[in-house]
Amino acid sequence: METFEADAVVIGAGAVGLATARALALRGREVLVLEAASAIATETSSRNSEVIHAGLYYPTGSLKAQLCVTGRRALYQYCKAHGVEAHRCGKLVVAVDDAEAAATPALLQRALDNGVEDTRLIDGAEARRLEPSLNPEIRVAIHAEVSGLFDSHGYFLALRGEFEDRGSAIAFDSPVTRGAVVRGGIEIETGGANPTRIKARSVVNSAGHYALPVARKIEDGPQYPGTKMRWVKGSYFVASGRAAFARLIYPMHSQASQGLHLAIDLGGRTRLGPDAEWLADDAGPPFDYEVDPARVAMFYAAVRRYWPGLKDDALSPDYSGVRPKIVGKGEPSGDFLIDGPEAHGVAGLVNLIAIESPGLTSSLAIGEKVAEIIGV
Image (cartoon, rainbow, N blue to C red):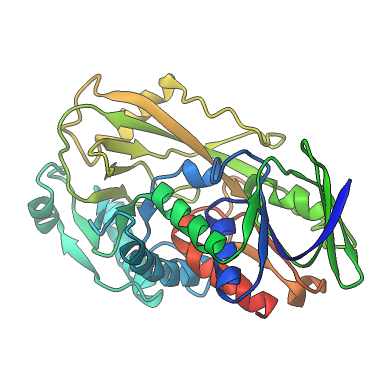
């Protein structure tokens, strides 16, 4: 087994791992990214809505709230500076009945408390003026002008280019098989065709779905007793025909997801989803990403509450993703787990666990936070 030393190792080349590698490289660290797959961003990062979230939903003071708002502002700037397509189309969160309408002031107040700018409550008439295809029964809506869509794959390539230009690198097909806390750093071993032992001064575990088991492979590191990963599969369908909306359309949200929202993606397609299908407790990666066509009936029922003009036989399966969680069904949505030396006592080690939505929007801010935790 080949053995060498490294300055900093980032495990995982998804959005957050790439953004973290970039943040460290910009601070002069030489970074080696270890990726189990043969390409960047093959799992959670590439199976999402490509939505730039405003930051409406997350409990004020939570990491999700703070990092979403900071990350969203940084993401628009980054896309503009690096030629990545991004469209600030805005979002309407619509209330179809009295109960939903009664809940909108609290959601608006949370958004304002979170520092979300350019967001206001509008009545149903104004919502329908903005989007004439909305259900005439819509009572009120929250208009978040800062929400948008972007080319996530262009973003990933830009992040990779930045840190590689500064002398850092990615090792593909390099799954982490074990690790240990040793004098002066952390030792990581990889499998694959070329097993390697690496001693690094700093290690960031951004392994996505595998983050908790990777953390538990590091001897004398935090083992997170009592923490259990759970999984929510989200499927998407696409609607045929000409786009009927210009903005993102969201229903009032649930605990597991922000509802079956509508987006006109950058290719001009009308995309609907994700839903929230809790997988079995013993489920785990690799996942079956096949979209069950039978779920279409639920999509029609949910979407027609705000878009009654959706035609029969318009929907076809598109793709799916899986959200990693550390809370169970029916429990309040959990926060990001960003766990550094101050929490677990291992110098140079940061574990990123249950980085689900809004992880993509938050990725630049998460990378900056990790760099601050490591102290570079």
